[in-house]
Amino acid sequence: MMASAVAIAAPVPVVRRDRQRLIEKLAGCGFAFPAFLLLLLTNLVPLAVLLYLSFTNYELGALDTRFLGLDNFRKAVTDPVLRRSLANTFVYVAIVLPGAVGLGLLIAVLLHRRKRTRTFYEVVYFLPVTSTLIAMATVWQFILHPNLGPVNGMLRAMGFGEIAFLSEPAYVLPTLAAIGIWQLVGFNMVLFLAGLSAIPRDLYEAAEIDGCRSGIDRFLTITWPLLGPTTMFVIITTSITAFKVFDTVAVMTRGGPMGSSEVLLYAIYLEGYQYFHMGYAAALTLIFLAFVLLFSILQTFVLERRVHY
Amino acid sequence: MDTHLPSPHPSPGGRGRSPVGTLARRAATLFVVHGILIAGAVFILLPFVWMLITSIKSPAEIFAVDFSLWPKHFNAVENYGFALQKVPLLRFAANGVIVCAGILLIQLLVAIPCAYALAKLRFPGRTALFALVLMGLCIPIQVPALPLYMGLAQVGLLNTYFAIMMPFFLSVFAIFLFRQFFKSYPDEIIHAARLDGMSEFEIVWLIVVPSAWPAIAAFSVFSIVAHWNDLYWPLIVISDTHLATPPLGMMFFADAETGSNYGALTAAATVLTAPLVVAFLIARRRFIEGITMTGIK
Image 1: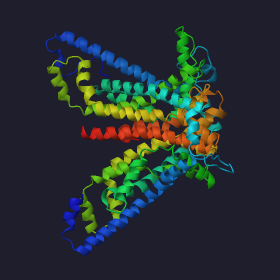
Image 2: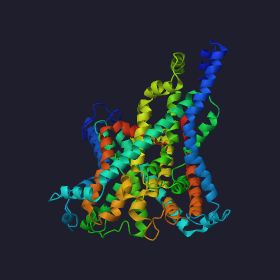
Image 3: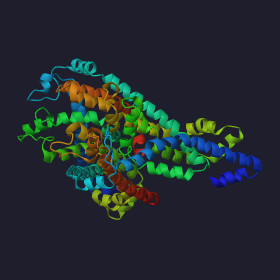
Image 4: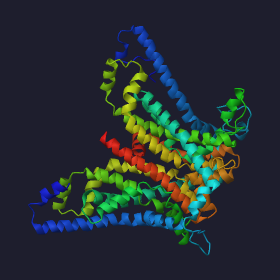
């Protein structure tokens, strides 16, 4: 860009070039100013306030506020509720991640060579991504209902007992995770399909001549290694999305039964907007941010590598 | 469906085998492939089908012990009528439209000039601003939410459309996306426009923006889907039912008004899910492009 600007600007008189530079400066500042102002108001100032709050015991409406130093963070480390919600969040991620990535990859690989049916399946699998999760969560709640839901009806018909998917502490996280997978598979499938279409076809033919006969052989020698960067990318976006689980918990279980589905964002929501413990909620938010940043740094690192691939 | 039809291309894998064996192998493969795909599709479609069917069933059939898939008596008018009368469903949908349109409009008005400036103009602070934009990409709404909520409470703006939209007026993602797009716009055309006496303002909105239509469409889809479906922020700033966005309205509805009227509940879910699903079915490519192109967020 610089080179061409200089090349064109060279023959024009110096006065005019200076004038153009001034216009660019003024226009640039003017164009960027609204965005900068909003960035300040909706990101930078809130971040600073959040940091300050996290060192205090501020509660909404409280008259006196004390400076606590790192007490909020010390409290967080030993807080059983936070520990439980972090553990629950990680269990949720640990189920959703392999499920949504593995199934997304499987569907994409199976779908990649389809011609006539590809559009149909693509639409079906992508449907949950566009639909309103809260509405669908309400429907899921009904589907999994112990007496009225079709899933338990089917289990009964096959002679099994009923399963209280959402009120049995041992089942509630896997159930929520299954709904998380239901929502994410189509998204990951599209990312994998894009990755697959970038693999040159003649590689497969060459591999076949070299003796890779079965589909699994071809997958392991060509598809999997060449899809590596896409897979890393999908793993990280899925991790971040799963880590931010909130909607299904808020609608279907509210952290219950007995805290067995309380996740990090829901704990922050309760502390901040139900109990109004702003100081403590701010500290928890910073812990949440630390995890998200960790994932994001990994993501930038991987994206960087993908460019050089 | 293309099940069990041999491919018109000869399979190189079949060299040296009898044609009948090859055909059988292909048929078996297709059978397994479609078996898996259909099983997955059933899992994906289950809640949609169940929602639609329940929304036209009568309470007696919903609570019947031996459940049937297809209703014997259609109760659609009652269920949808109840949902529309008891709950301001259309109001929720209208709120969703207002909020999404307001957010998108301001996002575009703010992000496009800024992205152009970052891509094509030399001005002081450009590098620093771009660094801030990149940083902003990593910060989810849940982080500034707490101070923003306190600020809005302070100035008495909770329970307003402004409160729902305000945190999203600036989309660092839009700036990032449009900057990438504008960077590849030829400088020669911009210089020619300048020589013709066009102002920078005219260059942005009359020359560069029309060429960036695909990026703008993709971002619009992303923004609308995200804000139509967002629950976290509206849940925090809205307690007045009349200002509820679709997900929040659904939550109020499920909580209070209907109790165990599943017919009406699923009718409501259908009405609030339908706009985006129908839009998706019409503009399939645009939707998939928009949501996944912006999948970085």
